[in-house]
Amino acid sequence: MGQARLRAEWAALYLALPVLIAVVLPPGTMFPALFGGTALGIWLLHCTPGFHWRDLRQGRIAWVAVAGFAMLTLAVGLAVSLMTGGDPLRFAMERPGFLLLILIFYPILSALPQELMFRALWFRRYAGVLPGGWAGIILNAAVFSLAHLMYWSGIVAVMTFAGGLAFAWAYQRRGSFAMAVVMHAIAGQIVFALGLGMFFYSGNVVRPF
Image (tube, rainbow, N blue to C red; front, side, top):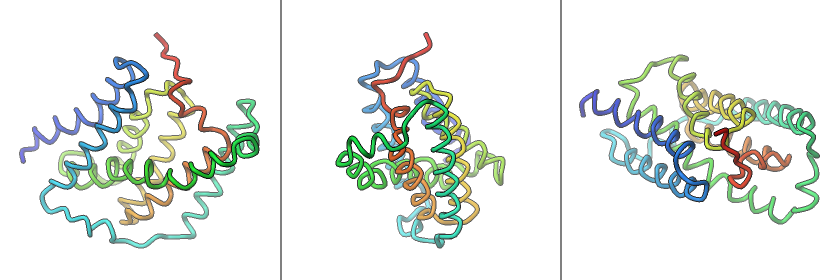
């Protein structure tokens, strides 16, 4: 596959699609479009020459690093909750059943497909047409943040960029897809447990135009 075609494919999937979802589509269609784009990305990963699903089992999880990341995420999440006037315990106290469902299904329905899309597909299919090393990790985190543009929130932009750096580091530098998924899952669970899921709720989206 030619490099020009790969660059165009990458730009359409990672740049044009998020902007289209955030700027043009009605709020009610944002998530179906996002899920459709993710499904397309997973299919492209499956079709990538030389890729095998067993490749994702490579690499070990550095649990000490994961624990440190979890503690840092918890500390930052608590600070954000308090700075924005929230009550970190309110959601857990008022809707424990719903929170439990989120904690169970977030790793499978959100963290896993996002890591397939933004880490496995990105670094396996498009590595040849994108910067390598830390420049590539930073670009990956920036585009991961762009994918959340539809929430029109500076807090979401910063959190997803920081998370993207950690997840890309786990996948690219540590060579562990599983570690990236675990870190992403833990981050999401902490965010929702602290009541910060309100920033990721499409019903709260207010476009600045």
